[in-house]
Length: 495
Ligand code: ADP
Ligand code: MG
Image (cartoon, rainbow, N blue to C red; front, side):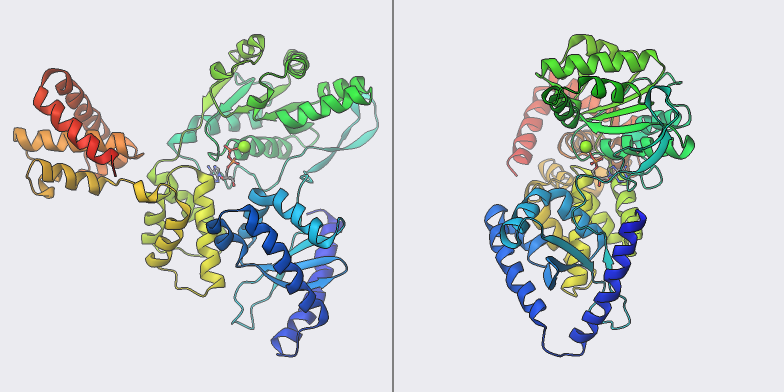
């Protein structure tokens, strides 16, 4: 946090303590407090019209107003994560609502309330000003551009919250992480130039590439690292044309040592911008500067993106990030809850990891919502609470098919006890049923081969692959297996 922000935060902290004392002493709320509540209710009315009832109940309804003072509305939230989450997801809605209800220059401040019933608990005020966008970014002092000796403050746009330290590694992001680590030690000098990371949304692309940028800055303090998005690059380019400052634009981008461009899929179809980016790319690459790009799909699927650019990507490394497997989802939940200062019982970790499978962003959302309910509504941290949160958040839940569902269905079909599927028996009908269950588990769940193996008496991943292969062969050669498969498949699909 820059010094001035820290100072502001501390001064507000002091003011807050007095305010809290008054409230705790059960005296009447001050005018500012009453106004705060009235204003916040107005804000909630607008928000309610713009989000689904579930989102509203989970994220906005629990927020209570505390104070209205100096055009600043202070609201209380249960954790730093909670507040970062709603800002990440609902920033523009919040911003529009606040300026509509409170005026253009009004601000929203968050106060983290850990536990209201515990009077010894300090109440903390965090992050000022409340809205973090446009990101402040890390500022570093670097030599001026074009070799000039002036030292300038250069904004990297990197968010320090994304680091290697809090990036959980697993099979799904191992290669991307390893390449990132190598780059951070030797930017521009590895085989990974450019590094193109692709994968679905919410899987950690932005976190990883910003983490690389932050690590480069740690290792090479004077380095000029710039993080931007393809949209921001496009906007900067348009501004440069409008204000006739193309030269400054070109000079700035060509003076970068490591250029990170997030979400390049948004370059698609923007011919002029892409052309400019292509030249920037070439100039930097030729000078041995590092390029790091992300995309939500493999580069070959980036329709309408300059072919020349796509072929340049082959010079370096194109690597994907896959959805996390069960073990990694559990590791992420464990790490993030520890960071939040909460120890989650293992059955809760397992439960959430089992049902929230799409993305790490969704996992985070579930955890934050769980912590919010635990802190705000004073609910016990147990499986029932986890179920309540997951039911609301995971759209997939009603349809989520588990390994146990599949075992039960297959065992029922073959008229065998479920335990037989887990046994070591090699009797044909039992082995066939087991292989069918494994094959369907691979199709209907997102479990890794390792996790599927664990669900069938710790069989190793090659046995799992072999089972799948066997069923695939039967589907071609044995009509009775084929019709069994089709029926089971149809039943599972209908769930
Ligand atoms: P993407 O850019 O692929 O859409 P993000 O990088 O924005 O995804 O990640 C979504 C959220 O999940 C972020 O809050 C990020 O910090 C978190 N996240 C993603 N991957 C990891 C990981 N491997 N370890 C810890 N947190 C992660
Ligand atoms: Mg991203």
